[in-house]
Image 1 (cartoon, rainbow, N blue to C red):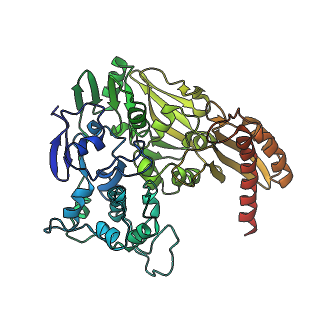
Image 2 (image 1 turned 45 degrees about the vertical axis):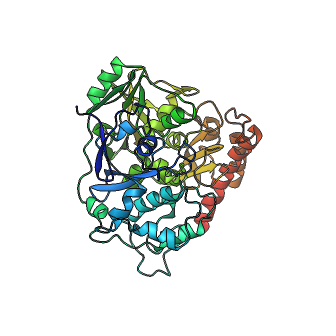
Image 3 (image 1 turned 90 degrees about the horizontal axis):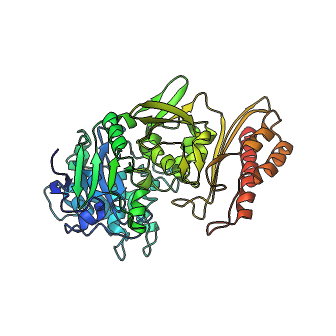
Length: 487
């Protein structure tokens, strides 16, 4: 193993002497790249966004925007990073100091005021600028909406970036004005080459270690030796613990690049999703083939978070307010657990045992999530939160129903935010199954649903509000399905 290094704006830089818990944000700023800012230290504002070269969906490489405040620098060993400072030369070859096209549009359209958030916006905007399948609509007057520009720009690419003084209209104007990358743009050309291959990492300093192995087998043997280790993939949860709660670990083991955890298979009887695939990768690879997941993704945090977060991580933390568990419960998912001795499959409904606790044993990893086929046709994901996007759920409800000839043949309902763990609404499912899909049935079942779980009063919502929202969500589903039939 060689000493850990990161290629930053085309130049290799050693990670040493940084501590293993040092974030990419601090690593960059200590090297004078102060365009990368700390705003919230928990992945909610985007001031720290940078670009990373990752395996692509439609090209060998995608430029992906991530929160530098959450990632340990060591997790990018052997990888390529571009900061806001590096964009200018990259976007205008041969003319150092000239603004990149997205920087130029931000400037001329008044998208920057105090400038604190601007570098993060620019990096998120650049990731969308370089998205290979972004294309202008043939008729700019048609086929667009407030969240998609005539140039194909998806405004959700900026959902993780906050601006406290400029306002969003000029930023949106800048996003909707950028054209296509020039043929000679080196970052555009870079997409045609493979991203850096994952490298084994062993970085030990001041009694702490950051470790990455090349294969799942090697990783599982390491976990057997170090069952106390913290396992990270996107680090969107652990990074908050490090920054906000000053937690430190004697040993961190990275699994984000393990090929065995990054497979996605669609078979005749199941969809199997690797635990280390990011939510963005899953979304783009499935391309709507699992409609309930397609409803989840836009409501799960922000694009910056989804570019790092994984299903394995969301289930591994065991949070009762994670957004994916209710959806996966409604889909009757199972988790595939692996250790050095083999694998076992556990229904997700039996996986959680208590607050942030599960049946996963020391030394076990979540290798994959398995969804049985066929899928139920009537689905919905309702997230009740204080903000439309980039917020934590007060209540989350996922529905998957089979309705044939006006009768509910099967009902699966997953709930989050109303108990110490994500739960299935088993009593409500029973109240629906075998009954006609009518207003009377739904009204009665909604009363049952309001009593599911043991909701608490906290800063996000009262117990009474949570219960009310459970019942309302079923009424909303019925209204949506009857509207769809009548239309």
